[in-house]
Image (tube, rainbow, N blue to C red; front, side, top):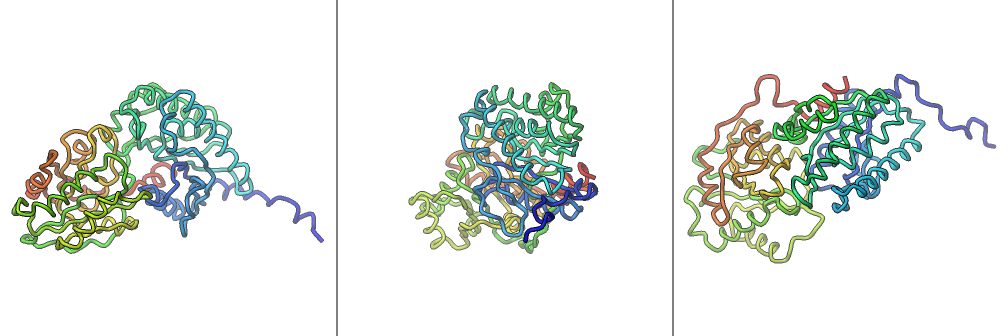
Length: 422
């Protein structure tokens, strides 16, 4: 026979325990590749170590990550429809959708108690607006927002889009209003000096203080096995590509280098003739047949050429990057004019942790070339058809850049917990 107690909902948690509930909102996390898994796993570890009952709320399409407290509660709130990111009606529609799904998840998890901390990263303006609307009706909490994207970002659309910038201003004003009306403790940070400058006028327009500079969201503070340093006379290892198949990430330039290695080895600069090469590509899409054949041939014919196709855990990735004296980061000038690169952050952190010099080759303008020095990476400008020559020149660049005392090993997750939530 069922008892009255069995029919009642679970009793609410004691207030002291309920206040330690933290939620990381990442509605765009819907697959295993990319930096979302690393960022969220680090946040969960840091929050749980600090005594928070932490979850990540992600897209329902995400395969359940083993060992992580992840709830798939979002649908159609990620990066699915870029036509609407800088469109007024689309932004409002997507913001309402996100707000509704946050509210529904909260109502379904009432027995767990109120949320004491909200963490938002890698969010576009419509997502920030949806979060702000949802927070208006929630108990006072700590709210930590990392402005990962540029104010004018549309990912696949125009760069410096004025409507997207206007929506960023609207989202910040909504966050400020939610904090004031509901009593939330709002803290806003950015991962680079360039973004700090870019967001400053929008934050001021919303009546908010300047964004705080926090550690890069990936790379910094991650433990990994540092590979033994190469002897001075040994040929360098060169990173040609790492990541997925998104446009503008330098895959075409890296494949052009592979083509030259295969077809014109006699033109290889002397310093690179015995070099080892690393090409990683892990994506939900399949490589075109011609590219796959080229990489298969390179792996079969070129000594020291490694082609990796599987997802690699962050610590192992950093160990791979730390072994590369040079990196080809020929990211698209337009797409990455103000867009940050997790790979630059990770490469700089890996070489810095190993106490070794780092040098990268890419285009002469854009976020990467401007931010490289801050990551301890010497920058060599290259050009189409002459990437190998630029890599040879970069071989002589760079000195070991060690962390300044008191920093270097601090991670983004540590910044969230120690600076914002304690």
